[in-house]
Length: 420
Image (cartoon, rainbow, N blue to C red):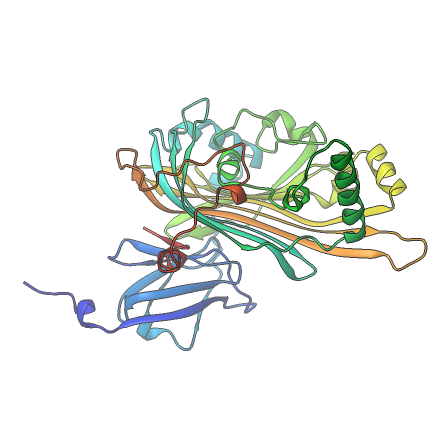
């Protein structure tokens, strides 16, 4: 019986950066999958992938939407970088022109229950949430969770989430407007003293968490295709044909994702729409009409309508000014047992707050928020949970931290972006 030569090859561990061969920038969130191993890794925001304990002659293919699939072995990697070439393709004009961009979206939405996992399934996931103020990380929570998820045909979601491990890497508090926070704490202490209560300092700390593992699952727009997204109480759903009077849609250049041909559709709110709406891009598999990726954020055209005028006036009275520079909601889907399901969710926001002062320099802080959840393994629901700690949806994740030994945590961290 012949044995694979990979068995006798030395194991390699290194970090590789995925680079665009044209503009030489990093390629974030690409996937590298080892051929014959049933295992892969998702690159981070800087295009970095960790190659741990693989035979040096093992072959892998790297995929990212809009790039040619690259086949490599670790032995063939020169230095610590791999360059991917952009890939665009010309779809048959007869296929594209009879359908408008909205027609493609309508057709894809009608096939959601057909294209996406019909049966319940279980997943293991890596989750992290990070808040940065003036380039300093002030809050960073990581968690490894198990989830039982209903199929996409279920009208009402019922996610069951359990925590394998969770840690808070930093307990630093916001420095912005620290004097105002101190004044508020002093008032709370005085009020508690008058009422005969004792207030612990920890009770006065403002929570820095905005997301949670269940929230990122509930946000999946394909699970809630009939529900309306809203900003300032306005319907901003761009996947809904009844909202087309607010948006303009146009075709981008078709691209490849592995062996699949993807139709690319861009959208933005119309210039004369006086409310905050979205702009972004949708990728649709030309063969199955499955939505493979949805990426969007607040449109620059509507940013000035984000907060109603009376709220801005109230902020002005308190000497506060805010500016939102960037927002992103991104959903990636992957094939699973003849259908598709959510593979990863990513949220980002960047903005600034300023406190005006009459007799001193203004306080100014820039904030960056990042949150992501990646599915690392998918199972049949018959596979039992390995963790007994049930996530409490009404409590902050930081209040449910499940610490494990340093060795166990390091093992989990090494697999945090690995998928099987």
